[in-house]
Length: 420
Image (cartoon, rainbow, N blue to C red; front, top):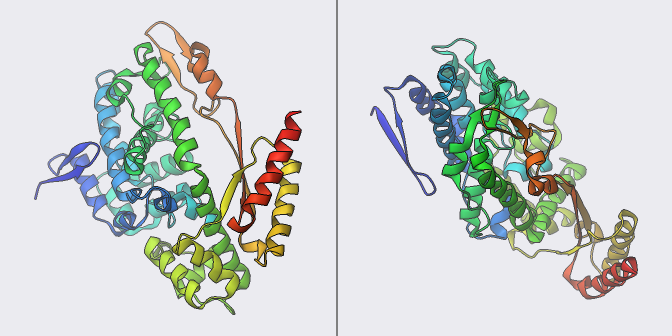
């Protein structure tokens, strides 16, 4: 068939036509095993344990990013026809930007210690199915796409920004899609107004027309709210911590005490030997199967976090963000003491998760306004955006339910003491 349609829950019909060479390339890339693997990688990792609808895949998200990149480019081509020459590079980069994700997406990166950007670049350069299709009619295009995804270097500044910036097609799609799948209402964007406001500054960089300022401010606030309410949700933090704990324990105990098939053995104990086939062989299904096996017949210190995850018998998490770092560590020691006193293994159910976040990064491809006469940094025009650039620290103390009451009383005491 010369045409193909993907019916997307957010964007409606995403139609591709083989009579268009760049869309034909996209169809061929979709049909490769590396891209089909993304059907088996959850977009939000273990967030389905918190938000029961969070079951969408990286496959679905990647098609959405392609759709938005095509819309954005159609709009920008009217201002700069030269951009049309890079359609194939942009479409391939938008589609393949997540092809190097580990199982459970960003959680998997932390569990296994990988960067998906690096693996996306490597797959594009080394997997025959991807490289041959990309280079078939344009030799060297595979390297262009790989450099764009791995290093942010593209043929034109605007193409780079559509793939990776603080207002790229990836972020626009995942905010909409994650809000939809988690049932939250924070992720609603004025997408049409944002796309219509995209323009090109005199230096060729992507910019925003002032008429889109409020829509972009709203987008940045939405992103901040989604991080607070979904990505850094208390239970999501606990699930991510448990997964990291399980993998770290399996690695520490080693092959003498932990069963793993050959693929997982490479991922756990010989990561320097990861090849393209062994990388692609691991997905949510294989990782999930090993968690099930370890729950059944693994050593107790590995079986326990696996059981907690699979049965959703989760530890608790208490917010200690307001406390000083030294106080947080003291509370972690107290939590471990209380846990031992309760007859539990503290190492498997006590931890401290700390992270600093910003809603907007001024020095990471910061956005600019351009009205045809004046070029201005977004944060200079918007006090709201300037406030989002201030760092916010998040800290969660993870502990078993059995010690919650006493531990939270101690946290309250310290918090009140810090306030006086």
